Image (cartoon, rainbow, N blue to C red; front, side, top):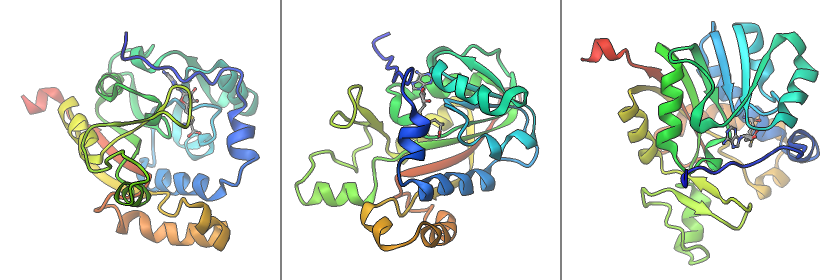
Amino acid sequence: MSKKVISDYNGYDYKKIFWEDANRKYEDMSDRLAIRRLLPKKLGKFVDIAGGYGRLAKEYISRAQSATIFDYSKTELKQAKEEFGDKIHTKAGDIYSLPFKDNEFDTLMMVRATHHFKDMKKVTSELHRILKPGGVAVIEVANKRTLPKMFRYWTGRSDVNPFSKQPSHLKDIDKNGFYNYHPQYMENIFKKAGFEIIEVLSVSNFRSTTLKKMFKASTLVKMEKRAQKALAPVRFAPSIYYKLIKLDPKATK
Ligand SMILES: C[S@@+](CC[C@H](N)C(=O)[O-])C[C@H]1O[C@@H](n2cnc3c(N)ncnc32)[C@H](O)[C@@H]1O
């Protein structure tokens, strides 16, 4: 139980405050580009884990046989229902014990959520459990090894070492803190859980207040389009996207 951290978005208008009222068109488009590249064309039975109010629902609804948004926040799930009605199912609960059966889904996605989770081993094992063998998971990871974090560390402005494999817990941003993960740490967890990594993208490469002042969102998106694949091998961006396949345990015995 001590491993659990719930970032409670109930009563918080994440949609309006974080996305609509803020200058985040570039970040939103970067997520969409990555999802379009990584999600299979046909999704079958699909779940968006920690999907919030369904910001990204237009990227998957028409390709899924059925689409569910799972989240802890009933405020956000209500907003999702108001916008998408019968086109989506919603389910409330806690990521550490997902209210779904083993092998229930063909495809799942989890975006912009790992920074809230302290125990990524448990989260990954839950995601693995609810996915069918051969099913696809697209998971975005909040990366601790970014260029700005390296500069802050080298110049002594931060004592968080971006090169250490251990997760970092940044307590200055939010009362629960934000967890950031080293790509290798997460890749080991994915493999140990029984996933194969089949594609990686470097995402939100130009997430910087300075760059956003210098360039229009459309220019940054154009650059982002080229950078997501090209920069994937170095894994320096704030968001690293993984396309994983659940290996069939029978085939690997
Ligand atoms: C930053 S938002 C991202 C929402 C959505 N994936 C997106 O990209 O717009 C993080 C989401 O994680 C959810 N969350 C946080 N802790 C959770 C938990 N323990 N179980 C389920 N959802 C959780 C929050 O309610 C919130 O909707």
